[in-house]
Amino acid sequence: MKDSILYSPIKFRNLELKNRWVMSPMCMYSATEGFPNDFHFVHYGSRAQGGTGLIIVEASGVVPEGRITNKCTGIWNDEQAKFFSKINKFIHDNSESKTGIQLSHAGRKSSTWKSEQLSLENGGWETFSASNIPYNEEERSPTALSILEIKNLVQEFKNSAKRSIDAGFDLIEIHAAHGYLIHQFLSPLSNVRTDEYGGSFENRIRFLVEIVDAINEVLDENHPLFVRISATEYSENGWDLEESVALSQILKTKNVDLVDVSSGGNIHGAKISVFDGYQVPFSAKIKSESSINTGAVGLITNAEQAEEILQKNEADLIFVARELLRNPYLAIEAAFENEASCFFPKQYSRAKI
Image 1: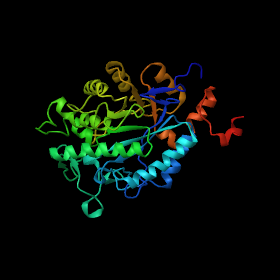
Image 2: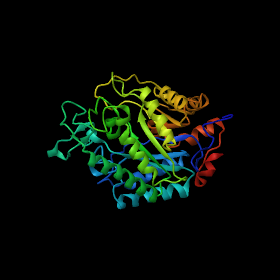
Image 3: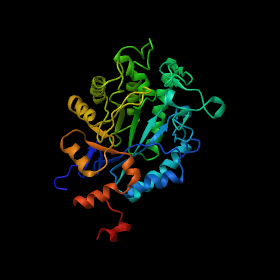
Image 4: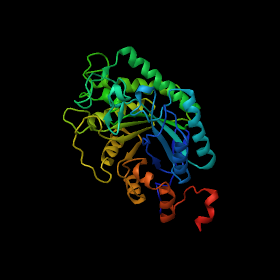
């Protein structure tokens, strides 16, 4: 691939990624009590063997009740972190991939299974949000967090970030998208608070900004910070692209290294037109108007498409989800096809000929 950006390195703080392929965080619904296991070891390790520049582990709860399902991973205690450290050590010892973890609290969208809320009698738990507005009117209402509870959750995000760095992760991503708790604070449709965490744009972003500040206290120049946002929620009077640009401009001043640009997820029944690369224009606008690094995500399935996005300066990283589930060796295979340089496991070197 002549003059490829896709297979060129990029640095965030002092951390260098060998290429621009990123494994987007995807829930595997395979944990027990928040603990990753041998499945996760093989799952993430195989993508590293496939040459992916950065692997971001699935949304992991900073508290037990913050998980989307009871099969989601968590990093609210040191024992969970120990198994993540095993995964990180294997990846770092056997590939050029870097690793990140997405820290999350699902808020009113927690206590679910197969996208349906679990009853309290069937393994579910009480949910929390910015306001007592359910995601789906058929679901029970979440409890609005008190200011003290908000402050405590900021600390839990910080604690989980520290635990993550100690477990060997190279970077942290904050999940502020897809209708989960932080997004619930951002949106005026799910946040009708009248205190300092609701109402104005500055108040609605306060929770996220406080989390960013807190996590940056435990990071150094070797460990970058990413934030995933939903650029729009596709609903009238909801969180929109202009607010995403304004937020990203602020995050740039807060030592956030990249905004991972997704969309939707907060408003039940929102109409979304989905097509290849449908979220790339959001990434491009935020990158252009906020002067911050961005990641493009959403039905990006091949190297030619990815390279075009980078060449047009619409993003700095390419986040790939389902295609990497289908093909762990996407980065290597595309490098073969385009005569680009990519990590290849030394154990498999005979297959390069």
